[in-house]
Length: 387
Ligand SMILES: *Cc1c(COP(=O)(O)O)cnc(C)c1O
Image (cartoon, rainbow, N blue to C red; front, side):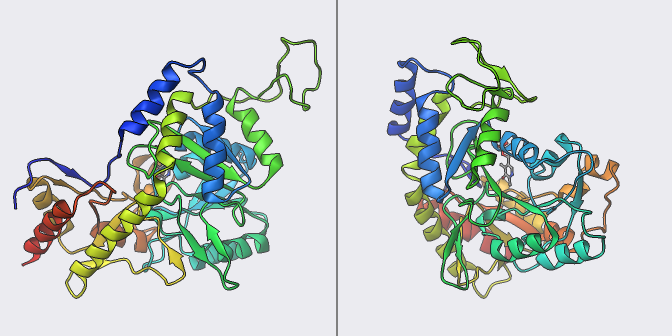
């Protein structure tokens, strides 16, 4: 079979409905934050099952504001995984805190709770302030277990759910916990970068069930200001009056982006179903071959942002796929090995499981508009390489 266009590992799906929704905003009164941001927040909160959602400019801003709301400062030490996008760790540095990496579970590639527990127990209580687990590739973290551990040590949890809108796990009592539903983690964040499930250009969201955190986040999102109509105003000089109560930022999302988000969100469930079809075909094709895939536990509904294989001669396969117009990607270069984190004291050998995982992992094409023919072509090329 011949494929004449490049096949990426992930990409957005923009329909005429999306385009019309964006154009309608350009004809409206609001270009910056307006009614569509509110609608996007309400619909997104309903989608993941949280009480509140706060839209922001991107996932990184969502992490930054979350770290602020959780009180991260120069005295904070926060534990996270090295197998994530750097921003999951960087948000701690934005607030002056220290990032402590814990290794991953070799089965799931998620933050290893046993390693986290060991680190906590090696230090006096009160050393750490929080944990940032990541629903890496779309695999929901066992947040019930992390919540129990966090409570034992008085820690908060910020869940990086960028890969997992719509994913969930079922706990021992048969209760479903959607990623970012606010039931177990204190705050969760999402990104709407085009490679993620829902694209808004740039965009991000913070979800929580805490009203107090929700109010803080609204304030931090817009300069630390409180506006007319808000009962939290300390003084009120008249209709013009607004009050900057704390140091905040301008991390507001525009209605242009939010309109795209609302439209995309209406198809998110379908996209997730399609991702599951694609994963099933990969699973079947690679079963019994040298290509290892990540097994998914029975109680888990995977978000499938990424489909990751683990192989020998990963670079050889990567280059071969590229020569055949398939643009696979590696997720991720371990964050603790980034020169910036090495300059803060991390080094090779610190996270042996993550480093070994990094040597073998490859994300192959996974997105709803990948056609059956394209997928067959991808599978054929991968199997060819090893034959
Ligand atoms: C994409 C991503 C982010 C950052 O999101 P942006 O919207 O690109 O700022 C953070 N964490 C993870 C795990 C991501 O995949």
